[in-house]
Image (cartoon, rainbow, N blue to C red):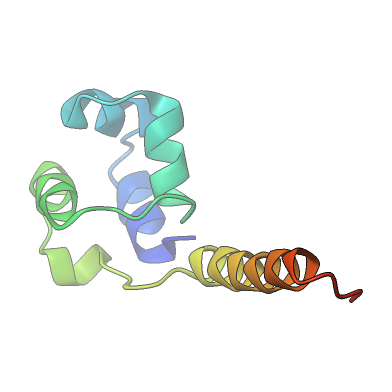
Length: 90
């Protein structure tokens, strides 16, 4: 979760739908960015900061915990697939 971003958004009473519209993406796509399932691009960070009237540094979190968890799960699944392709039981 991008806790700093969420806090700044809520403090300004701006909805996920508002930011999604501003970024020209769906609310679902924005939600995935805010929760860390999709990485927020550098340009999106700048655009969101402009909308919230804050600096990027005030809302930026490089790797939200959810993103790290998903990355780790992907690594484990890749190892499991490799083991299966080699005919090994894990």
